[in-house]
Image (tube, rainbow, N blue to C red; front, side, top):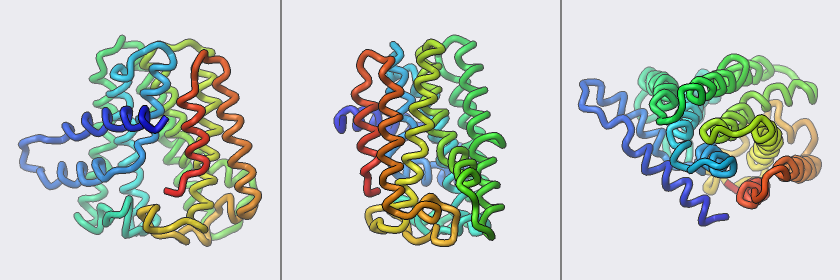
Length: 286
């Protein structure tokens, strides 16, 4: 699994390294965009897109433009999430956050640039037009007001009060889970997958996304800031799963949702990589 993970991630890194190398006057903007886009990270979303594309009969390269698009949306969301008006974080992936290096205005514009460029990536894919249209619909839904952005506003609105279980699920299924779902679905779309394959990808993604977020909440309490590349304890007063259930119950829920993610892939002949990936993410320390 680790070797295949490295291959998927390296393919994405090579692709992203060629982005925004323009000879234009606004070089500072391109520099800021690349600073965050190439700052490392697990590249989970591009990996998922490529893996599902191969699982559904396509080639990993077929999903590269879609994978780059979802990673650009993810990176823009991190830039904006770190801003003083949002979470006010100074470090991301072990490096100073974009606004600390380039100032708030440039950081906002770098995020805007990445979000816009993401859909340009989808449009340039050498795939049938109907697949590109479906990809645009999927990413815009998952990233926008009904998905990630909607989750962010719900999260901010809930900061001053204690949320119910359903409210926490409403926030996190959008804020974190929506882009993971987009990545999995984009892989199926790139391969021209079936409705049954899309449903399996959706179920896997939703269970994985929930387990991923709960693990994030746990690591904010028990994690090592050096390994995480960002400060811990930042979510102490937020509506997290740890605040809702406690550490022990969260560990059990992570295991349960991981099992459900794995079970969703039984429709495929060999989904061993994605099964192992889900299990690995459930035990990660960074």
